[in-house]
Length: 254
Image (cartoon, rainbow, N blue to C red; front, side):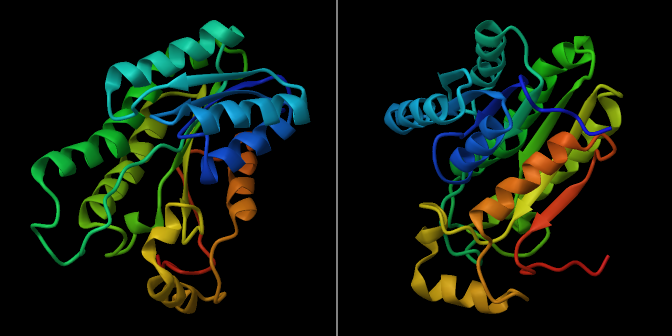
């Protein structure tokens, strides 16, 4: 049977803007209480929380935290449980990159590579590890959905470090799904080009090229992408899977 989302408590990291904000809205529309994590700018998180409470009549929480800092990841879980009494779902949407020349091996410093790995890989591990005991106590367990990228499956993207760490992230997702037991459903969504503030940093020429390269000749619609998270949260028979929502930009042959 589908997992009912009404009255569930969901943490969305990087949840105040762009795709994260749309995911937060979609889960709120299903009746979930939403903990919105943000890294630096509190204002969009506060505005979104007010919007969600007004529109969907659910509880919200805003939690500041850098998802490349493991203590902050753990705190996001703790604060969600403290505010709502439990946690049934996590959307690991926070990510980090730096737009660079993919072909330039000196484009990013060692510290930038480490930051990319910390946010995109280690932070996801920390979230899963901290939430798992609660998932195991929940009668119907819980779900963890990671926002990855088609850069995990292709030799391209905003930077080499981003592509490499997103590939590691997808492998981590599979490992977690394998070892975390029957109470944790763990999956990833791999978006293509999203025209958010972040996606628009590619610039008009690169955006036009990415649209043309997609089989459907367009960007990934934000709402279509957010819908995939709701589907995965409700489906009790999917775990360890990566779902492409990319307008056919990176069709895989295997």
